[in-house]
Length: 171
Image (cartoon, one colour):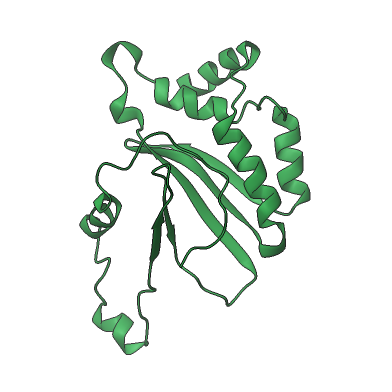
């Protein structure tokens, strides 16, 4: 069971708790072993799930071979949800998450993650946006603090908006 006290809050509840698993199943053989995998002794790891009181859904697969944690923080809604009069708003919003927070500037975010030996990447696709992180277990809490600050308190500074807009136009 999930026992860590997570730092994210989300006022929206998950409308369809099985949607993510069905989406994975629709994209391949998630949940079924191929003959080749069976011959090699591969088994699909058990997914632990928990829903926080604020509706945020957590999914965990544990593998203790290496002292690493890889996590994805996903938000339902990507560029497919952009209203016709605001095409690109999801991409710009995702980019602005990297433009600093109320407490941490854009350069300091990169410096902190680098100094912790971590990787933190943002993305926005047609139906999801979020952050993906990878870090040594001992530095997970520190990287998660930065990631949660980025998701919960983006600064949306005007001086960064034009830079992000230009980057998104060139994609």
